[in-house]
Amino acid sequence: MRDGYVVTWQGREYDAAPDGDKVRIYDTTPGDGFQEVKPGRYVRVLDPEEYDEMSYVRTLCTWRGEPFVVLAEADNWLRLEYTGGRAPVARQLGLEEFDYGVYQGWAPAHEVRDRYEHKV
Image (cartoon, rainbow, N blue to C red):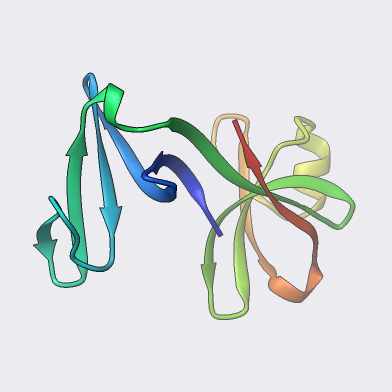
């Protein structure tokens, strides 16, 4: 389950975070130019001309016939955010109003359908 920036560098895709005009890429193993920021977490800062592509990836799905973004996974549950834009439907599904007009909830993973990554 992914939700965030990714960068393609040297033929491989990395989790990434924009940092001004540069980008930080992350890996779980040490590599050339990577610095350990905590055990098992390595970072390297790239200039724009060093990487091939930056995208944003979201994991989308349907639950009970309605569209959602997958935000997190814990055990056999998924944290979902409703993207259908209809408050009565969100309330009928038993979702919490996390923020004004933003509805989220936990769903059993086995009930979630059509899970896929969407890259922008």
